[in-house]
Image (cartoon, rainbow, N blue to C red; front, side, top):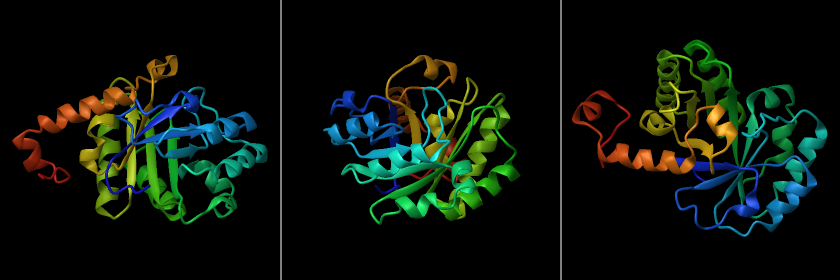
Length: 237
């Protein structure tokens, strides 16, 4: 999997339900923390590549023991797995994780996920710089409680991109979820969104992946002359 263009990854806990009907998805994000989930992944017959994650969107579960990591390591060898997303804090606390799963065919995503707030720009810069040392792509997901939070995240994406960091990210929350749609204009190469609607989607005020895809297409059709002139990340074909 190459993150040279925007990758829309659909988050799901039921990979067996994923069919070729999800034409708006570029990849599937799937959390593995049990043998049953490893087995379900092995039975997956779809064509979309898989990003294994150490987190889940549904209940904010995180890996917290070696047993969880055992299942991740077991799943890495599955044919359609092309990337692994590990949480920033997890990697910081356990420097043996990446070497234990590293493979030339795998992209390593290091994600910083904060569902409480959006840190200031200086803090995000520090996180990005450190995360970039661990993986191939950095992902930021923060909660926006006011408009300047969304601006802070977009600025972080833009500046990291200009510095040569491959990065993705978006804000959650009513005032931040629009960043799922416009983040690619600021350099984002990865956006996660729920493959289908759920109560968790509503509580975090996220768009579904289908909605994100539709809104991005609409935005691309209506990019204004002003945006093309003032936003250095927007380029005409």
